[in-house]
Length: 130
Image 1: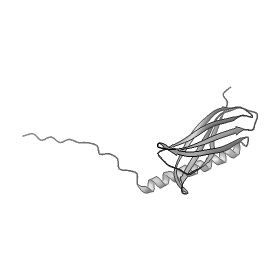
Image 2 (image 1 turned 90 degrees about the vertical axis):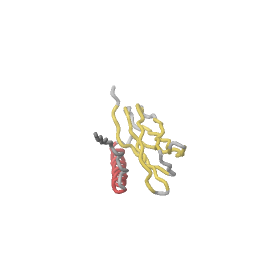
Image 3 (image 1 turned 180 degrees about the vertical axis):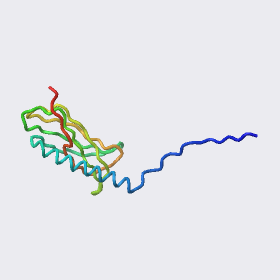
């Protein structure tokens, strides 16, 4: 008589609450670091627009005004979304080629979370390539 045994991988357990909290704190630190970056280029001003939720998540309109004369190749805007004052996640968008004196616009999409507020900052920039 032959016996066979099969092995199968079990799905990974969900992240423990402590680890999820650490990830949220790291996201907040990253957002704070982005605010320091934004201060490094005072010519760039972030403006937050309307926030709304849909079945997929939450959306925030954002714009970056370039009050300087040089073109900015890319500006990454990162937003920390909250609901009732508690973090529900972070999301980013990249706005490309913002000419001096111009404004670039986009939306930041948080997938899966419903937020009632957000705080946005420029987390990084890149110079124009030509």
